[in-house]
Image (cartoon, rainbow, N blue to C red; front, side, top):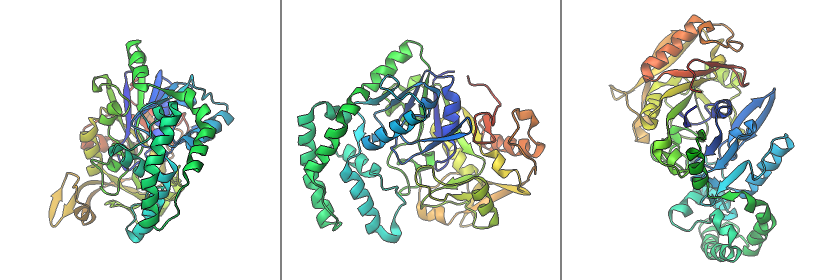
Length: 428
């Protein structure tokens, strides 16, 4: 397998965890390059569900994993996740996992500001998970962040935290009317975990570069989806990092010339968690049926996902932004019982057809999907292991997706387990 990037093409929750787990078998290193613990990847291994939020899914396959500089890391969540995986007999020792010394640390004040800000917005809230991801990226951009390398110098760490906390407490007290945070308490929390963290800290960029020179195969794992990208998504209803494939290079410290294959994960329908425009959202019984059949609840938050028909305006946008070389279609089996399906091929806005994804939220909210209708297949696909054995109407549905996206399908997932996978075109 060549060096491969896996990205979501919709609003996250496309099933990247399973595909990364599948591809990890053929990789030497697996790298997470953006986001924080506001993402969740769910894998089903031997009938058991395992969820990771920070550590790359490849750890399940016992591949060497890296958390890149583009990720913001809550160290307490990281250690809890290490303990959880160890309890499931998975090796997460420092030999198997490294965290970039340039990765920024989510501090307690980031979480408090995140939650206080969402409360203050009231009905205008954007649906943040309240885990401090956005405020941490803010401090990164304003050059006031705390990085993992700062933990190596304890006195410097204390000094930096003291300086930034003075400002954060003023903000919390006088703007949000919220409780302030005690400096000694913060320092004490980190003193308790520092010795556990230090062995995991490394220059991930150098480690990956050395691996590439030693002919190691790298799998780059994205979080969320293209339309939650801070640059290209449904702003401001987006995440705080760049989720597109180009950030795989920047967020892990490798040159873009090392990225060979870019696989876009596409749910066979569309879902979205939290607030923000969603042109193909279904509010009827079909939407409820898809939600129930697909068990559409967030792996990280447990929030119910909004469900709708497959949106090709969204997918074509992702194809362009990511330079996709292939598609992995997930949850095809969720559509098995439907009499008919719809595919959105464009939007109608003020009497005109729009084929490209508009940046203006108000315009997007007023767009009406233009649908084409396809007959359902009314057959169980969950046991199918070869593409040729899919129902004819199922193949026609997928063929139309390929035609509209102009990108080949390489993988089709028909269930949560590894075995419920059809390899249409081998990228290994």
